[in-house]
Image 1 (cartoon, rainbow over the protein chains, first blue to last red):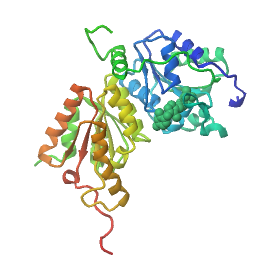
Image 2 (spheres, rainbow over the protein chains, first blue to last red):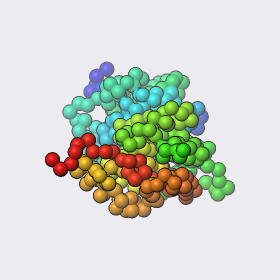
Image 3 (tube, rainbow over the protein chains, first blue to last red):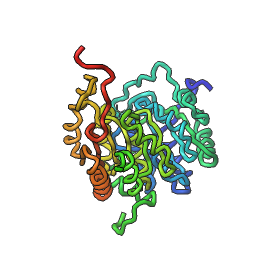
Image 4 (spheres, chains in turn purple, yellow):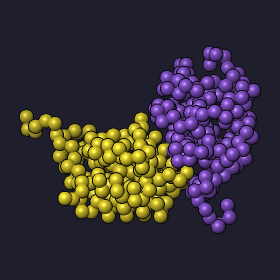
Length: 201
Length: 176
Ligand SMILES: Cc1ncc(C[n+]2csc(CCOP(=O)(O)OP(=O)(O)O)c2C)c(N)n1
């Protein structure tokens, strides 16, 4: 389907739909800005990592997690503007082909958090086509919410790497992540089973 | 016979369980990269950018697989923003090994100019870093820097000086 015909979805709604399907302590890495804000708003899980800077690194971080823990499924939530900054990572993922990695591209066509400016993809760059061109065979646009649910089920049941493109509306995020990086890292490492601590958390 | 620097580095990485080694290549790093590829202990591969390698190492270490990114000076200097905002802010022991270009006989003016920005940047990031210049200090500096980074949850950078590695010789003769 031509990506321009796609129904526009709401990032917070899709994030809640994803989180509701996670039953096995799957890792979720939220990229800079609104991708991680809505992940936070969907309800904190110890297996969530909220990236508060380093624009473009949600997929590389998720790849590192996926390589370290092959038995755990990992999701990266990355904005379209952010992905444009690090397109090469799609080739790396295709080459390493981690079975447990799924990438969700939050494509609202803009740099929403900095004021909604159009990205350089406005000329028609198609992220799913780019992903396929990088060698990611399981790369599709989700056509609507029902299709999104089905795609997530497929990603949870089959070997990846998977990539799902999501055309989004321009609604703002539902909340803001608490900005305390060492605390966020500490909780994530506990959530990954890497850090044990008697300190409550 | 004494071991070459890259054999020492491989031994120290293994002793400290540093398995995940993404890199953007450099000629001086070639024997190290080759040795790491040849050893199934390591998970190693090239990345499109050094930033990507830092993201991968940070994800890996947070999920229990320690890592070190390999690069040259010019690659390091693409990193200040992601180092400041990811491993420095989140206190993640992301390790880096940088082959020093731009000093002690550099032939490329661009590399020489980038080299001048590296130490001020490392200091500005307030990140521990050490230069390895001598073979007899290579094991100690590498091992202690890695251990301190892990114990203090800090990124750290090791610079491989041409004094250690021989550097990259000029492909052209000077003076004409
Ligand atoms: C290297 C770098 N350049 C610019 C910025 C400023 N910045 C922060 S978020 C952002 C936009 C992110 O866009 P996108 O990933 O599409 O997410 P959205 O805001 O649309 O949710 C920009 C330009 C930054 N943080 N880092």
